[in-house]
Every structure is written in C-alpha cells, then in structure tokens.
Length: 184
Image (cartoon, rainbow, N blue to C red; front, side):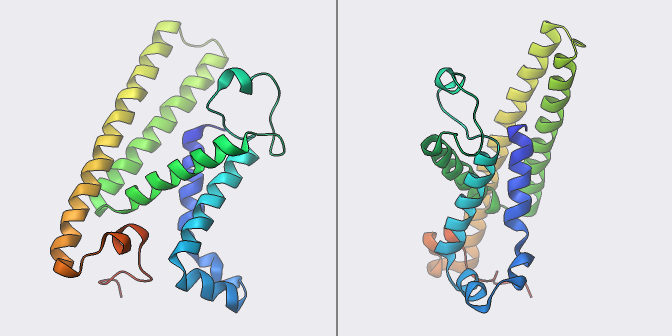
C-alpha cells in the first residue's frame, strides 16, 4: 500500500470519532475527558496500520534481508514513524479551512500521481525519463504541501492568539480541548 494512501486511511480513522458511541461508558468517558489518552490512541492506531503493512524501517538494506509482515516488522522504527506522522497530523489539524483543504488536496494529488506512476512503471508503460519527471513533480508538490502546512499552522496560531488573548495556552492549542469554542 502506498504511504500516501496509508496517510489518508489514518486521517479517516482518527477523525471518525463517532465510533466511540458503541464503546462502554467508562471507555467513552476516558476518550471524552483524557486528551492524552486520545493522542496516545492516535499514535497507536498509526503504529498498528503501519505494522499491518509489515512495518517501516529507516534502513532499507536491513529491511530487504527478509520479508516483513505484521509480526516481524521493525517495531522501534515503526513507532518512531508513527509518532512523527501523528505530529504532522496534529499540526495539520491546527489550520483554518482553506489551507487545510489545500494541504489535503495536495497530498491526494501526490498519492494519485505516485500510484499511477507505479502502475505505469510496473507495466513498462513509461520511460525512465517520464518516471523521473513524475518523481520530481511529486517532490515539488510535497515541498509545496509542507509550505502550505507550515503557513496554515502559523496563521492559525495567530488567529487563536487573537481570539483567546492572554488566555491562549500552547498546551491546550496543541493537544486540544473537548469542544471548539465556537462550534455549537
């Protein structure tokens, strides 16, 4: 599975908070009242999904020595990557609507291009030069998406500092609250 497809799957799972209504009352209370538990659960979900793919490793040479599955993947590297992806998720969640939509749109386009490129490449339907151009395009779009992500985050920090004034707190801003102040 492509890592970009995986990222979309992660976002879909993490943001589908309606599932907690079928859990026990104690679990619902824990999920509702403990922002730390919610964040730990988010990292755990990403970790589990990466491990279902066989785990990810920082060292491709060692990774290629044996076939990996959910029971033999690199747990340490995968946990580090899960944490890093979750940090990106948290940062991307701290943005106004338009930068957020642009960021997710760019990530979706990167996924589409990369998946189609892989399809063509595996079937010898593109030349090396075309493949290299698509890889370069994806790298450029990735850089643009990171710029949009950082812009959206900085813009939202300013927006929240203006809205909350002296009661603005970084911990609450980054880790979240139970409800948004202006959402009914």
